[in-house]
Image (tube, rainbow, N blue to C red; front, top):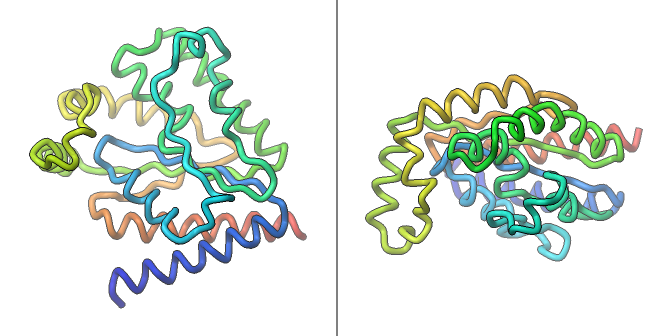
Amino acid sequence: MSYKTKLAALQSQLNEVQHRVRETGSRVVILFEGRDTAGKSGCIRRFMQHVNSRYCRVVALPAPTEKEKTQWYFQRYVRHLPSAGEIVLFDRSWYNRAIVEPVNGFCTEDQYKDFMLEVGDFENMITKDGIILLKFYFNISKETQKKRLEKRSKNPLKKWRMGEVDMKAYDLWDTYDHYENNMLLQSDNSSDWLKIDANNKKVARLDALGLATFYINHSLTKKII
């Protein structure tokens, strides 16, 4: 079976899942985390390709404003959580503070430690309130990242995506590795991480779509029972 055929079948299943979410008034949050160039955004586009965008939306927040920096860390994410019948996809999430921020010096050591202590309670709180939470982590090898960064830097249609953080990602690989391992070990709580091998983007998209439809359907069935 070809990639396009498999993709279409999984997207059709996702449409059915969205209908169930709407029908039951459920709320779903899917986090997409992973290394730079791991293919998170491309995967999200496949999720969004055929769903009803009135009830399924993507949240990709920019750097916090000066006002947001004075707020409770989770506050700017909370306002984007779903209402009944909605699915929200976070293209990077509150887990910026677990990896990207400490690696690049965007937060203090105390802020990082506070986050790691609080994130489990935060996620337990929103899942206890009924939100279905899925957490994807896209893994790639160091060699794959190097090739993709080089390819992106030479492509005029993708070069705009090369920010300062992206350009330093390869050189800081080992530091990212340290924080990534800490995050995956310490934040498996009410919602475990679903790890995706993203060295092959097409396979990663199929895996993520398949896991999402399975876990959401499973969670909806448990709620009904």
